[in-house]
Length: 395
Image (cartoon, rainbow, N blue to C red; front, side):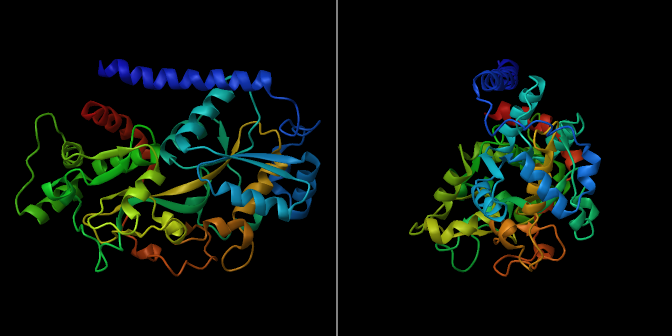
C-alpha cells in the first residue's frame, strides 16, 4: 500500500501538471505572454556579454518577462521593476519550489515555453534534475561577477541564503528559547507542541529532514549530551537522524499545509505556552504586521536547522531572454549598501545576501554566527528519496 501511495503521489502529480500545461497552451491568448517576433533569434552568448544599457534596450523590445517565484515577495519585486523600467511588464507567479519543479518539467516536456526566470530553492532537486537536464540555465550579470563568491554563481546564481530553522515565540519566552537540544522535542514536555510543514509536500522541509539524517554523528552526540547515555536505535532504524525523526513523529508532530500557518501557530502574541516549530528565519520580517513574536533558536544543539541558496535560473528557451537577464540583474540590487529597490524585499532579518558589498542586516544573527547547517545539494540529492520513503512509512 505504501508503494502504491508513493507512486500515485509522483505519477499523478506529474501528469496533472502536464494536463494543466497543455490546457494553458491551447487556451491562453497570444498577448503579452507570447514572445515578440524575433525575440529568440539573438544568440544567448551575446546577451550574456551585454552591458546594462544594451540589455535594457533589448528587454524593452521584448516588452515583458515572466517569473516563477517561490516567495510572495515577487509582488514587491514586480512593482519595483516596472517602476525602474517602464514599458517592460513583469508577470510574477508565487509558486512553491516543489510546484515550480513539477510545472517546469511538465511544460518543457509539452513543448510550452512561456516562462523566463525561475526564482527557486530546493537546490538538491534543482541541481540534480533541472540543471542537469538543461531545463534551467545559469546567468551571472557581468556587473556582479566579482562581487559574489564563486560558490554562489554555479551551477545557478544565488542572490541570497535562506533557512529552515527551529523558531519559537519570544513574547512568551523573553529570556531565550525554551529548547536547547533538538532531542528535547521528542520528550513528553513537547508532545503535540512541535509544528512543521509536511516534508513530503515541500522540498525545503524534506531537505531539512535529509540533513538531519546526514548529520547523524552530530545527532548522536547531542543525544548523549542531553540524556547522558548512548543512543539505542529502534528496530529497522539505521541512523541517529532517522531515530530522531521517528521519535518526533511518535511524539505527536503537527504537520500543517503552509509556512504561514506554522508561523501563526508559533508566533501569535498572547500565548502562555506556545508551540515551537520549523520555519523560515526571515519570516520575522512580518512580526509587527501580523502580531507575531517569531525568533530563531540559534543556540540549539546540534543545530537549529539548515541554510540553502535562493536560486535564479533562466528557463530553457525563455521567450524573453533579454528581459529575463535584466530581471535577474535587478533582483541582485543596485550599488547602494542595502541593494536598493531591487533587493529591498530580501533585505530583511534572517536573509543573507550573497553579494559581499551588501551590508548585513542589523536585526539578525550575523551569518558567521548562524549555527544552521549549510546543505550540500549533491549529498542531499543522493539521500533525500530514502528519507522521503522513511517519512512516508511513518505517516
